[in-house]
Image 1 (cartoon, helix red, strand yellow):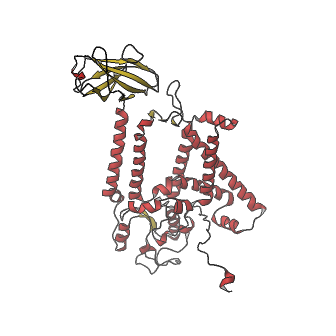
Image 2: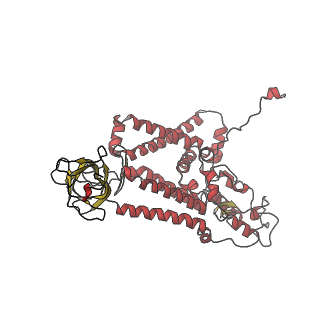
Image 3: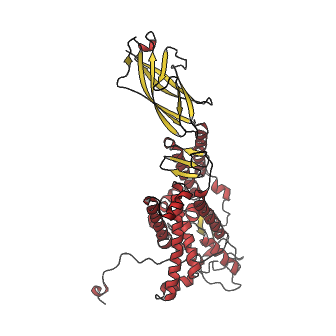
Length: 485
């Protein structure tokens, strides 16, 4: 056949779908437990109730975009307190660095949303179509009534899971029972329907069809993780010194795990580790970008080793240092020594420091906030009796769930009281202002210095504006008083 008849060469091979075989073992059970826990947290959390008093949302976890607040059980975060959220994000990043440095891509293998939902979809597929061999035969078979029925059933269950996933997401942003009622009756805002549709489509496509391609091509973490790992990082690896050369082992035949050592390795080249891998890789080829360290290959290999009467651990969690030591007959380092090393201790110290700082800031934050801005046009006004008056705009935010009466006062640069400085609030007789619950009041404040006061002759005098609530809690903010010179 000529080159013209064969056509131009293709640059990319068509994707071969991966059908991982079911496996049983300690790591599979761990994945089941983590999947159940993470899915339960995601789906149930919006329905948890928390009593915050009259007029306040009773949803335990709520991102209230309309009122620009975030509720997390007893904690309420206002927009100007976004540093709490930023601190949590930094802690999440450092936690990811910490676990990756110690145990490789455990996040990817066990708790990443893409992994969790893909794993769920794979189990649904296995339940409908059968295990790996049955799925491969069905994939290669011609379309028939049976194939259409199995595919339609699988896709329908995937779609239900995807709709529930998208629906659970929008419940985090408004009252869940009320939104559910509006969604069912068709009265919800179109943004809610659009969000559910987008989340449904992405979950259905990513978990059901894209699967490992999201991890390999779309996610940047596989390319970043190398900077977090070193020769002490525990990750899934193949003991090549013990498994090679591969080959079938007859009953009673000596291998490298026997004494005296035989001519063959313990690996019988059964491909069990490959068949259970959700990424479709062969861990015996060494560390690869695609590996998510889910450790299912460890369960599969241990099962084979039990069958042929060989020691477990041909594929295991180990570090490069361990592999080098074991090759010459020494034992690898203990788990504690792998985890407690300068890099992981540095990450843990930073993570802990940020956590402690956030807790301290949360405990020390005031139940009300204030901000003051001097009116600069004009800087001051000279009254008929020679007194000097400055005008300020004060914003007082009451973060309590009840109306409070705040008293205002002013102090000098050294904290001393200034009787020659008169404080008045526009619209009230006494410097006491009532602010409704969870609202911000904007006040016009006047400070007037007597004609014989030294403040009138100084161009700028530092002052401290004091605000107190009925419980005696006080907040202060610094400002300046402008005089003639």
